[in-house]
Length: 371
Image (cartoon, rainbow, N blue to C red; front, side, top):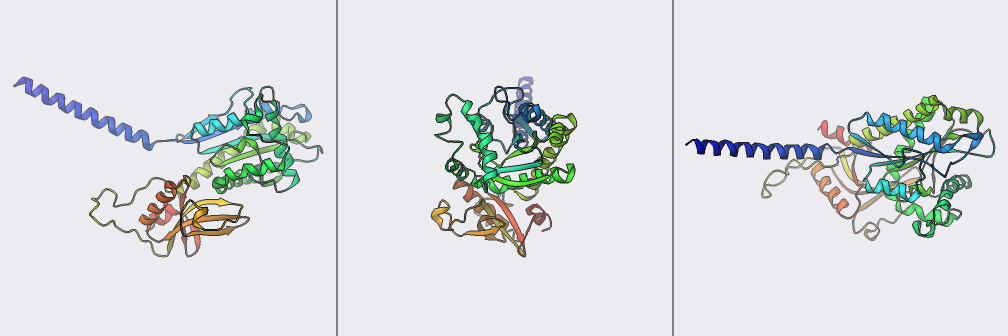
């Protein structure tokens, strides 16, 4: 009798252990962190620009570490540095760090230089065609570092940092993430101008090689000009570095907040737990059109299925200088979830749901909450 009781109690403990194990595993999965790769430009044998005797590599490292320190205080954000000391990191390796870690964002930090000491201000760049000679010159200067690498011809597939044609080829791989990159860039730039009164050198597109292999929303920040006496001194100061870092930190936080409010990542239809024989419950929200945004591009692409991996019914909408491409249109939230799944299965891994109420873009989360 005692043996039977012992066996029953042992079974209870085993079942309890198994239950706790799966609960722990479930919590671990849902608590996946938002990964941000912070890239301090140059380093080691590559000092960057030396305007007014300052070392770009040292200044950007201090700013990068400060950004990471601030973001680490947020429990759901994980920070990964491409370098956290004075080490030379090849450009292709920086992208590999982001790829291998499956990062959600990539932020590369630099300081600018120009022949005229009067030039000053902060600018933020995303990968794209050089819209004018100045943008190309900035990108060319940053890309020249590959000439310090032993196997740069092999590592970069024959890329020539002095060739506009090589730069154009870079843009094709990042088009899918252009829209998100522009959002983050705009947030950073707005903070520089509104919070710190930095001269606004705008958000621009240019062919920075460091962004080539970052298949995720990515920006390159030029925090200011070391060749400008006042701005160089500011960026070399602890106060300046902390203020610039705080602006970048706030922008990343704002970007993530917008992402959380507007993108439904893994939410399943309400009927998902019901038997397949039961007809799924509709979640129709009157006056609202849900769509799946699959890409944003500076190029105007014909909306034929062969241009979108077989997806039919693609809608192209021009917003400013760019074109956004949407798949599907429905007021039924369950249906749009299925369409998003189809788009991701076709390879549009960054596809997300957007909502329009009477033609105006609104928050998906708010629409669902007010149903």
